[in-house]
Length: 330
Ligand code: ATR
Image (cartoon, rainbow, N blue to C red; front, top):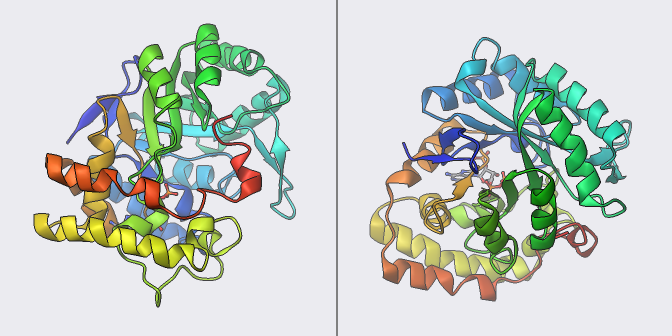
């Protein structure tokens, strides 16, 4: 098991954690609750102790699921959750980001209740509230640390400048941002800032939302009820998708040479980028979870890395639709 510390918090976790979002929303219908709880228990038994959720995933449903699954097992898990984005509870539509203390207090009490715990290990601001200085939001979050409701503070998709300003108010233990063979835009700014402030990167979508695993093809795309088939995912749009699949062939070729799975190559690449990098691939299936955990045993050669390093520049399509890109690197 490859273990790494989250920032300088003294909280050590398996470097390959579990992103839980897909169990409740965004990648097709929610997983049946019994199956989802079984998967979470399998993950704990397999050595996973870092579980990532958010208030907005299923509007509380994902946190409730984890709360039920972790009943009686709280000492075995490090729980990370996030707050900030607001949604219309009737339609699910996103209505903005509210980084006010009042919204934080509402959110944290809900999360604690849903997660059935008295503390959150790592609490992230999920997207930046660009109407408000980050100092105000992180200052409010620091009160939660003092009150013992959260152990550490993180930011998600924050810029280098935001990270530095936030860290001047309270240590920022982690940045959670998308990072993968295909998505390397954080390298120039946020990743360098993290090194300076001693924070960890928690890399989400390390598998490119599944694309890097080689499981998708022209004939086999994500279904209709899926975030990746909508206007939100330019890399999966017609044209870009086919071009990007050709790049995935390079990953599957390297995987074949190692006699491993492409997902393992993608995760080994991420973890090889720095000692302060953790990752949280998402899966709803025990078999895929086992594959992903096996990535800790995969070592890439300099030649493999050189080949993989050429791909990001050739990827077609932004990470998100134009409107959502405004809240990235913010
Ligand atoms: P996110 O962080 O958004 O969850 P990700 O970790 O890059 O994104 O990728 C998640 C997707 O990869 C999920 O659709 C997951 O599908 P399953 O729930 O069917 O597993 C898929 N995925 C994860 N691990 C996989 C693996 N080892 N092989 C194939 N697909 C995998």
